Length: 124
Image 1: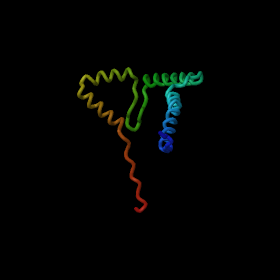
Image 2 (image 1 turned 90 degrees about the vertical axis):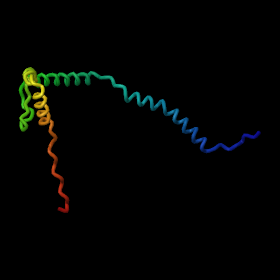
Image 3 (image 1 turned 30 degrees about the vertical axis):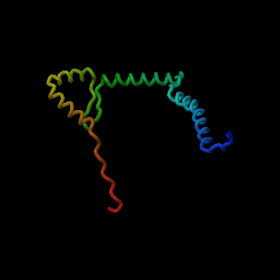
Image 4 (image 1 turned 45 degrees about the vertical axis):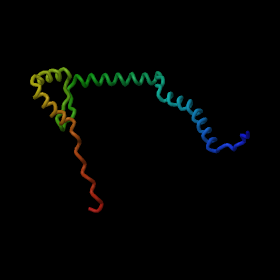
């Protein structure tokens, strides 16, 4: 029996492709794992994060304990949290009215901005 058949070109390409895929797989897995793992935090980054946290906490204390105007045009103000709790408890003595007023205030506070006028055509 004579097995001196010529090697098919498609078979060679297929074998090369499969071999390349198996050789590339460990590299791809390493690269993906490296991207998803968090890097160690150095002293500089830890100090920066601690300063940012302290700033947020100090700003939140001021925000929760002081009166302030949030939006002067719409008449929205910020009040201390203790006073807000008192007003909320008083307001919700009548839940139906309180819900209606709450929805009206939310619509006022989160109203979408007015639409811009369309740009006139160059032929107008």
